[in-house]
Image (tube, rainbow, N blue to C red; front, side, top):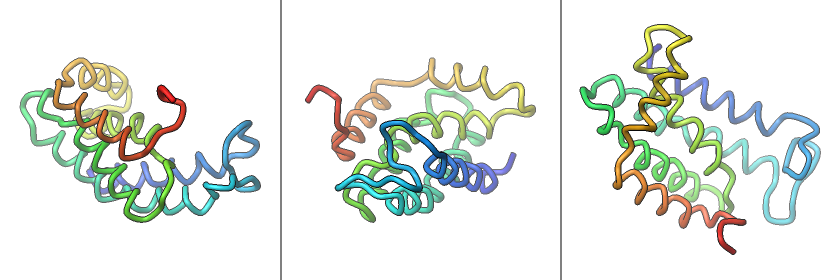
Amino acid sequence: MEAKEIAKLAQIASVLEVSGWPKPGNVHRTRNYDDMVFQDFAISAVVIGDTMEAVASQAKEIDDLSKAELGRYIFQAVDETNRWIETNTNLGIMMMCIPIAAAASISDRFDEIQENVGRLMDATTVEDAVNLYDAINVADAGGMGD
């Protein structure tokens, strides 16, 4: 699958996720919070496109899965989102979608994606962990040690 197509699918998935109804305890199309509204999630879905395309492109080019830099791309997506909105709308979905995007890029068949996600996760590095930690801080994620 091409990197641009993977990016579009991630954007679509993000929009569909927030559009679901009902979502107990979460923002959705008929329920906002004081500090977070449906439109924040729609904006988040748009601004992740470049990062999703980049992670998919890089995964295809590397010869060692530890060079996938999943943590860097999670940080990049969260940081880009933070430039547009002031609340954490996509740390969680990026923690899920970044490895899936990389795995989809290196998979020849759909049924290989799950195995390749596992291989990519097993190959993460200390640098990935540091970048993920930084992403959590930038996102100001609630419920993580508060």
